[in-house]
Length: 223
Image (cartoon, rainbow, N blue to C red; front, side, top):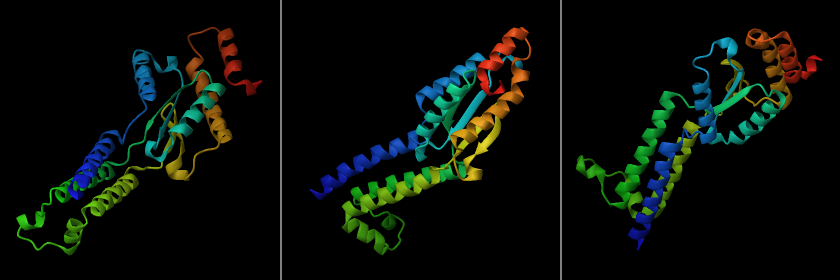
């Protein structure tokens, strides 16, 4: 009975681990589609013809997707001519590989416990006391290994980032400041950048009447 329970738990652990491995850097499909559409629309255009773009790189595992959606809606309401895209901020290469190593080690350890295999005996080594305890308490050992490893993986994969770029120019970094900007701060920063880039972006290729109308519509505070 205990062996069957361990096998069921192992199957659950494998499913969760596979999800962690392949979806840690998950990016919402709508945002991925938005990024792809932007890439398809602008390759043949010059810089002066591009719409200004706000790019937000956020920590998906930290739960910042909701904050991104709220900020995206707010920015689009205030600046309808801006394109807002977002994606997951990936951790460093070292942290990513270390998290994968922990995940693989977790799976191997649980598999060995369920199969009642002593890996130390194959190498002619004395079996450590902790492994003897884990073999005697498989259910608790599997659960402890799973949750402890997942905690370490989450710590490594959670960057805590909420990085904001205007036309690839960084205007805010949560990694540097330690916080997400307030709504007023973000609007002011975008407004300043918008006023700076707007003459370059929309100053050519159209009539003066069109430029004046567009300026009044997007930056009403200039009135």
